[in-house]
Amino acid sequence: MRELDSGRLVIEPLDATQIGPASIDLTLGEEIRVMAPGADEIPIREEEDYREHTRPLRLEPEGYLLAAGETIHGITRETLTLPANLCGFLEGRSRFARLGLMIHVTSAFVQPGVASRMVLEMSNLAGHPLRLVPGVRLCQVVLLRTEGEALYRGRFWNQERP
Image 1 (tube, rainbow, N blue to C red):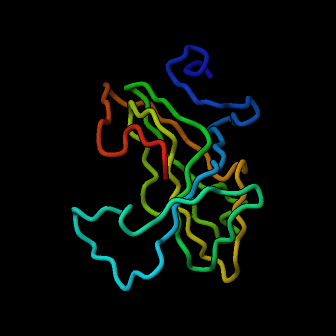
Image 2 (tube, rainbow, N blue to C red; image 1 turned 180 degrees about the vertical axis):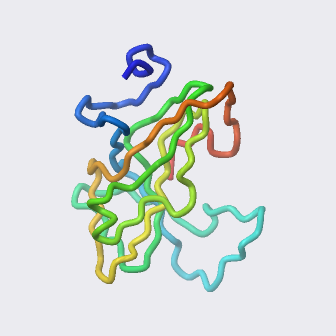
């Protein structure tokens, strides 16, 4: 709370009920990115751009039906701005993991100095479809103090779209 009160940590928008004893809940925004139809194979190489193989969609109020085995990108409604001495991890909420929803496939780490919405690499591991609805608290961020300071300025440091 001290970091929020001082303005060094900024989460917008933020409802005080999202703040837990050791984490802060984040909600699913209104934009997703799904695999483009027709791809036979996608080469895995350093220069590959995920945007060439996916397409953005607006998430309607009734949500998106995530098929069993499907992976999509979502993005949080909240923008998270960290100071140079805080980093974090995105974690799924267990209530949804128990239903088969993975919130991040590999990119759980939140870099110090980031100022962006958090991309969610969501996968359905259940044997049935799952409906993703905007505004639901799908994940949480756990913050850690770094030793020293660092600023991430990589490819996704100020991302606004999934």
